[in-house]
View (cartoon, rainbow, N blue to C red):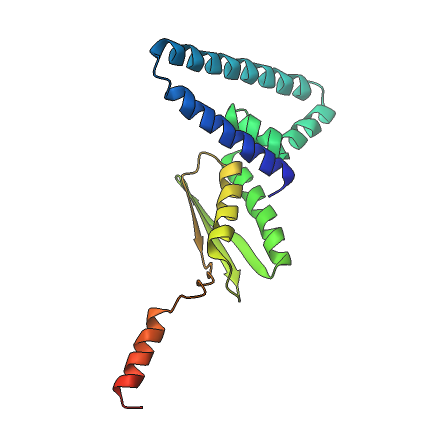
Length: 185
């Protein structure tokens, strides 16, 4: 994750935590005011961001280049997505995220490619000759896709060969041992 992605994720996590805390306020009046305040602040930010994009777009090719930079920056892209103002469609955002992930994994001896975008789901193909620490790799890939496309519900990663835990014995090894033991060898 880039530093912008890390900062975005920290803020998103903090906001989610505070929303859950606000929702659990037992005083209905206080809870209502808190939610209304949050909605008003979000609407204000959305209107201001929309106006910033309009001003930039109205200033010609230079403004369009600035909008492109804003749309591809991790932090500002997240803000545009939050307010449904992102200029790029779902497919473009997912392809950009997959390309960035692919570039990282190629340098580590693996390939990641987009297999399909289905309603609510992104399918990826992970290709590597070696095993990987499955959970951290899977989480990193999912986080990058969800950051680029929060409207996605599920990321399926085909081909990720996970490194088994140190004390893990595959069932196939147990069956082979039983067959060898049972044959008198």
